Amino acid sequence: MDGMKKNPAAQALGKLGGKARADALSQTELSEIARKGAEARASKLSAAKRSEIARKAVQARIAKQRNQGKGKTA
Image (tube, rainbow, N blue to C red; front, side):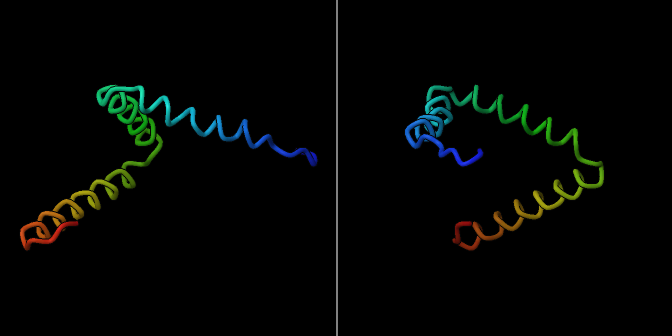
């Protein structure tokens, strides 16, 4: 920024904006935003990469279920 320092007060307010908005949204609204983000991310991935991510997710779910069955929490 050519030697200019950022205003710390403005930075603090900017950081609060996202949290305040998230707190004001319902769980349904948050889920909808997350779904749209996931769709946008997935549309940019190749089919092979999407498949790899899905495979890892399934493996993580299976591992979590196995650990819970043994009295452990993941």
